Length: 326
Image (cartoon, rainbow, N blue to C red):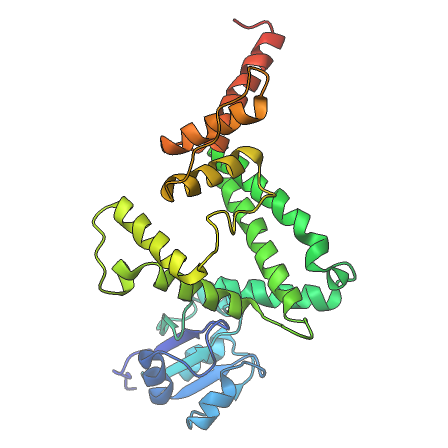
């Protein structure tokens, strides 16, 4: 009786991601596929199969079992298993059970090889697909317009601000997701516009182009040594893009009052225009608040944030007073 000196062979579990176009596999993956003695795949509808066929790689579509794979690897052979979306948990469990049973004296090595992997931001593709399906199949979502859901965007942004102010990381993460949903939802609705449609890719392309234009110190030859230099470049690029007739153009009047006052004061200060007028009297609360907002903005403080922080402290003081605390 002779012993096969070539070893027990190898099982290569090849994983891929649906977020990368099928056929775009790593070079090590293609090397393993071409050199394998056998390639198996449980999922007959796996998106990689047509591309492997075109490349001349023969794939047997059946459910591979652990004992079968061990036998197929005898004599130093290699078997590549093209993993399905679930990662083949049953197969790996069977192999682990077989290894722990002691029934197999020479098990092949089990290697995990990522054939393709997600790039940063790849999960956004899942969000787009989920939103497409919800828009198509949900009776409520399919009937909404951007005007009808606009208020939700405002609510979600306020909830995000509150989470940031509270320093709650878990809440920040969740609220960012809710804000992102609003962006995806509006873009999905816009894609159906019969006259001027756009989709989320158009939205992303637009903001990418804007960021590149407004960061010439990163993507061009401009120099910026300080944050103030960066701000000046940003404002210069913005002025060139917008070519507004007034410094007040583009200031949304629907934003909170203190934020609106600070924005107008900032525009006026940069354009060397008159500051807010002095209050006419002690009961002229509007102009008093306007003056305070302008003063805070000039000092580098966001008055809206400052007031919210003071209000939260005051709320806590009131709660303590109600409990009789000192």
